Image (tube, rainbow, N blue to C red):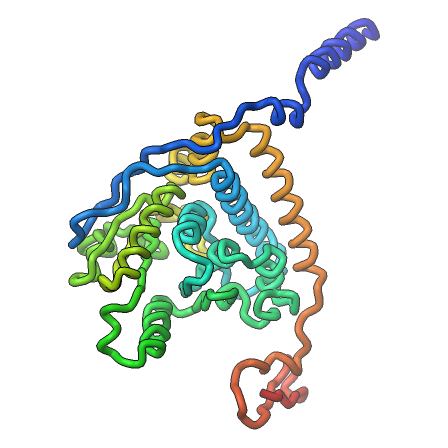
Length: 366
């Protein structure tokens, strides 16, 4: 028995000695600086031309997109865990599976562009530059959150980012209203540089799009407004379509509608298991064939833009970042009760805030 064990250990040690360390392997690779990829052609509505069908991806951008998408994926899975552990209360709408939409949109616009969205905002917050720590702490209602723990899942803000908003469709009039306010007159609305984005994940809450709509061509729903239908599972396709749409608006041609065909692995919210109106096999088929993170990774490896070992290292770093952020989000202090009413009104007299006990009240200063 001892001889057999010694022989097995010897074989393992011999294999380890022959296998190069990941750092050595990475250092010895001859990387390509960039590569050209074909992307799916967008469906067009009232447009003579659309986004390109090929695009160039640099190694630097590819690694950045991968890290951003992996961060969003892991962050949402951690939020799922924290919700089930009751650290997160109330509503929580996750976006895992839709990472290419968040990252591709951000890659196609400028940091100075203004973005407003609906309640499923965690991924967009991350893409806009908010730290995972600030997002998870906001989800758990801690004062280290991006809205000091007072906004929660559906009311997050960042620089040039004005939402989530908890009301379905609220981002439309809020965003357009803000633009009109800047333009000072209604006649300027048609010339405003607005890109209206619809993320079509094939289901509206628990109902499939085919059962809920007479027409599922949502990119045509603007009627007199031109539209695009985009592969929302491909970060490069989303990036190029967003660049096209942004350039279209900036050239004073008016607004444009962009439908991103995507898929979400979680249900509508944490109260929705997501498998009563679709099968687990359907979800698994999308994961195995169209997962946005997997598609980018395979492209980069096959084009020698990166190695599998590099992606593994990124995965380890992302997991550590998420775990550290989750630890902060579950140990940071909650905002004091007397501050809960701050930032609601401006230049108004103080008003009362009632606590959990109806006999305990605080005066809140605006």
